[in-house]
Image (cartoon, rainbow, N blue to C red; front, side, top):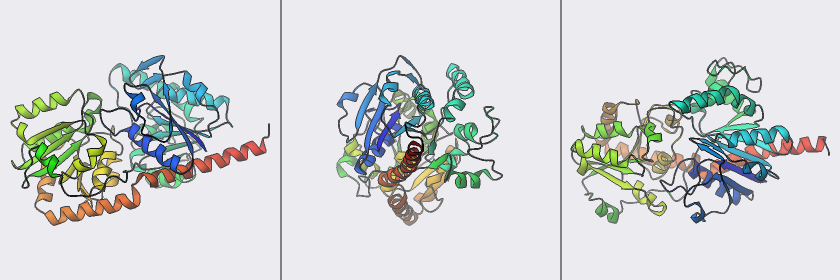
Length: 421
């Protein structure tokens, strides 16, 4: 099949190696291994020409209008020809409308898929624009969609996608959709309907390069870590748009943990200096280790430095965390917030613990609980690694994606045969 992925975030962005671009990269690589011709359309970003470590094709989109998540590049229209599947990764306003219009005018030429990766939580003027788009544009685009893929059915229940596409939701004033059906029990009906209708679940994954290994002595020396230190880890892009990661609450929790507990904060962004200053002002500067951007070939060694991986997200801006899955693949117990989608990879007491959003004291209690039970931590880590190996590897995710694409392509072929031109 000829497959196109359309993503706002290029795989080349080097503030971190994760995010939507990260997912698109691994899925595309695996789809190529499965024998498909894959092209990724991405928004332009500095350094994208240097990104050459891929087996798929990259087409750069140059915008006429660029504002927040709105990226309008008319040249995308001319690139959509001859694809069997066009998969837009939401949020990507601008591309969404172009592909929707193309589908409307060329219904039998290709299948239109949306990967609903996360909600947008805008503020101010951005929020007004988004509401207008939800009301006036998205319903028309959705009428053209053949399949909507989510990383977690659990996340979908409270997401904007569920409010927008699910029957009878008053959230955006959208009429009931017979494609999905009315559900007396939303959770059960969602899973049942997703098997044959509009929604499908394809989880994020962890690459095979992530697995358990001993702590790297070289990295321990770089960061001044001692054998007796307990290491917590947080990884994420440190910018304003990702304040939903909840790092503030983890920094606050560190004030109530023992002096031998250290926190590694991986990632870069314009808020890094703010967090560093906050750590120094609270007297915790020596216990906070800001790594900056971590190179791809050092990610596994960094995960294996920690004893517990923590992601204290505070709202649905977080859908399903690739970094949490990578840490889990390295046999690290997880502490994550009890949010729909985020919690889907956690079996409490089996591979990690759940805490309430915006609750630093709960983080403290769960960290202390685990540190008092070292054997349980080891068991949790191994349980998590086992689960990743059978459920959350990118080859498995890509295979599920391929099955969805094949079913859609078969329907397309059937239409073409029944309507010869």
